[in-house]
Image 1 (cartoon, rainbow, N blue to C red):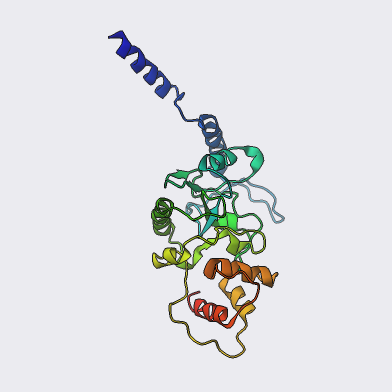
Image 2: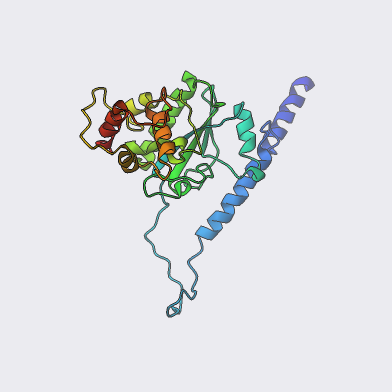
Length: 270
């Protein structure tokens, strides 16, 4: 009987003391502490202070409030060699990088940050008039070294996650985009193997129609890129980012008549 009791007691001890096999137990405790500190700040009624006008005699907190909701989903590839390597990267403070979700090749989804918190995944980026993408988005990292296809199991989990996010936060179809879209010339993720067309068929991101209209005379391709959302301060980089997303077989920095037809069609969807 002893040989059964001792293992059971050991399991119970490990379970209740939090000494289970989770290698990230220590970073989870740090997460909870940081979250608790943020909550403490949020629950404080705004203090009376001098903002330049007459100082009021007391503090007043409004009763009409809720949390800000994300309006974009930004998809990345990790550019690392394993899911475990990425999880490690996101749990080291010195890296100063994070994402809300990491999806491994086998379809495992790691939810690493509450959706209402601001992850550090977009960096120096811009989409339309939005220049603080981190504050307005959810970041999803796909385990991929940058030069390989995405397994079906990984894309299936991604689709299920996107469906949940779109429903929960009413994210517009056009606002499911890639890191390369918001950072032309700086980022190239997700890579050319990413199935944007498949995502679009399910309502996540726009895609051109199978039949394209003729291009109007004097059509300005760079202006069309800007209207869609691309930062065209470096127009050649913007063209490459556009092609990586919509025409991945061609990475030349020039817009052909066919490219312009795609752009003209996409304009109608934004």
